[in-house]
Structure formats: structure tokens, C-alpha cells
Length: 505
Image (cartoon, rainbow, N blue to C red):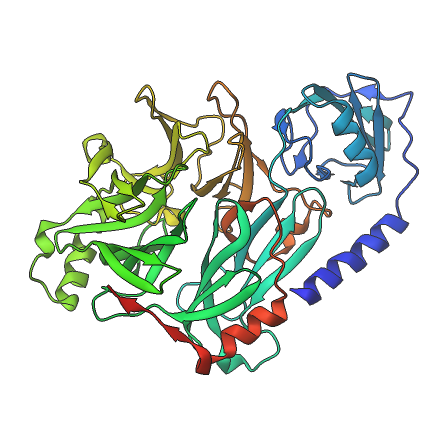
């Protein structure tokens, strides 16, 4: 990652040095069609603290100009050579957004051709009054299937283009030491408490608390399998996990390349102060997965598929049966009441009966005000990152209304999502750009519960996402950056001798 960042920064210096003067043409002929731009930032709502929305014009020309004007009269201008890359000054952009918070921006684009200057129809940007959390963490991984080479966890400052490494799996040691890192999670949008899993070589769960990292062995004979999909309690030092037995299958003839299946999954409860773990739900006839606490910590949401046909089967038969039934598995959204004093859970309550809708759910997330349940729904299964039918839905927990986010969704896979801490923004993974790579998209969710058009994570070089041959995975918003150094985290991962075992209770 550090080498790729160096390459991008070097390329940026070269591009900046070659740019023409940023002057708005006064004699441009109006074009009849909208300019083709990448990424698609036309007619969107953006946070007032987001980095510049740099774009690349995909039109014929040897010179390009872009101007953005606020309702207060403030204007910023950028120019590009033949590459069409308009990159706006960060300081001027920040001032423009601050002066027009809650207002509109008008974007005018120009191209110089052999017939002179052309002016394309202007479009608008709306600047929301509410900011987005300043940090987004994610995993970068090649979209492979059976092996991994280099992957890592990174954090991006959304107010600019700074990227820092949290952890990389092949940093400063041999390739045969490679392992997987996944499922990073935080307590209540703060990096003061965070965790992620390490699989294969140097396996364990890395937990960071009070500025110190520790690797834990979360395995127990009483737990079905490895713990995954964590959700940290918003108030107490508890973590809910699912314990999943997972496999992959490949389609011989299907536009969807792969199917990721669970042939067993339960919910477990971890007390991080006392290093104890216990089962919340341990069943043979149901697959429970994707736990998520409510903002007040008094209810645990999760997804579950009823599988009575699995009772009494050994693992091999469960795998075979799941492979036969994969496209008829429907996961409903359920919840359990939770008493933090007694640490006891209540009886399951149906939240969304997806089976009755002919749909299937994954990754329930509750808005910070407790009103909305955000979830991905697809035709079947629960690993919707590979399902073309996957879309984002919200259920209004006050009215009971369930609806698709039609403005934010696309015709491609839209899945794994997170709320901002103020509930006004959503970040999710989408393959809408090319069908192969997942990239983070940001969408506004206003006070009336309406979703707005989603836009791709801004990059300094607008072509960067096309050049980066990795998928973004598990976007998570936080209020602050991970402060522990990558060297300290790496040292913890590699120190197998100091791994601490937990106790089943």
C-alpha cells in the first residue's frame, strides 16, 4: 500500500505541474448534451466536511475547465489538460462548502475542441447542514476466491485524502507468513475500543483498548466455530459475535460468480472485562448471524434462517444439504431484549419477516436515534456482496413501514452498510461501477427519512478507483482515527506466545 501511495502522489505532482491556467472561457458555445464525467457526482447531496469531489471529463478536447459557484457568490475554478482531470484546491473547496452549508452549488464544465470552447449544461450539488464522521476504515482485498496475497486494514480521513495503514498482512515478513485480517469493529464510533480477526497463520482476535493491543484465542469446544461479524455494545465492554461454519461454492453457469454459504451459525456473547464467552443462541435447526446492538444497548438484532432439515446431520451432510438448498434459504431479521445488569436475553421477536416477502436479509444496522433499521435484502442467502438482487432497505421502527432506498440503490450489488454517528449519512459497498470491484458509496439520509443519490468516495486522482485493482470491504465510520501504530499492532499479531485464551461460561 505504501508503494502504491508513493506512486499516486508522484503522479499527482506531475499532473499538477502540467495543468493549464484555470480561467473560465468567455466565448464558449453551449453544448446540447450533458458532459460525461467520472465519478458520477451530478445532482448529489454532500457533507459540508467532505474532501473535494475531483472529476474526470470523458469528452473530446485538449483542455478543460470546471467552475463551482455558491449561492453566496464564492467560486472556485480548476483546469485540466487532455486527461480531463479536474482537481480542486482543498482549502478553497473547504471554504466554499463552509460558506454554502445547507445551500446549493452550481457546477459549470467547459472543453476546448478544434472548434473552440464548449460549455456543457450546468448541474447542482446540495451541501447538507450535517457533517459526516471524519474517518472511514475499510479492508482492501483482491476480489479473489480461494487465496489471498496482500490485504490490509486502512483508515481514510474523509475531510482530505490522507490514508493511514491500520494493519497489513505481509508487512515486513515472508510471504509464507501471510494470513487473513477481517471484521474490524468499533465501540460506538470510537477507535478507543476496536477489534479485528486474524485467520490462518498467527490466528486470533486482536482487541485494542486503552491504547494497548492484545491477541486473544476465542476458540472453545462449547462454541460452534470461529467468532465473526462482531458488534460492540454501545455502553458496556461486551461484544456479540456470530460463530459461523462457512464455505464457498462456484457457479458453472451463472452471472453471479460465487456463493458463500453458512452450514452452521450461532450467536455468542463475550465479556471483554472478564475474558469469558457464552452462547446466546445455539441451535441445530436455525442459522443465526450478523448480530447488531441497538443504540441504547437494550436489544440485539440479528438475521436467522430456519433449517429444520439440518437437525442430526454431520458437517459433511450439512454442507451437501446447504449446497442443495442455498437458493431457497431466507434469513429473517429478529431481535432479543437484553438486560445489561443480569446479562440475560429475552425471547426472539420478529422484526422483518423476509421469508413471507420471498427475500432474505443480512447486516441489520439501527440508526443512532433508534428509529430506523437499515438492512440489505436479496433474493436468498446472506452473503449479498455477490448477489445482483441485493439492495438497501429501511424499516421505520415507529410506523413499521419497510421500503427500498430507491435513490441510493443501483442495479448492481449494494450491501454492507454503516450509519454515521448523527444518522444523516450512510456508507455502503457497491459494485455499480464495473460489476467486479466493490467501492464505498456515500448517501444522505435526511430528517424526513428520505434517501438521496449515492456518490463514490472522493479521491485526489479521480481515476484512482479504476487503477486500484482491489475491492473495498466492510466500510466503518468513526469519529477519531486509530492511534495505535501499525508497528505495535503488527507486533501483537505476530506474537503467538503471548496469545490469551478466554473461558467458556
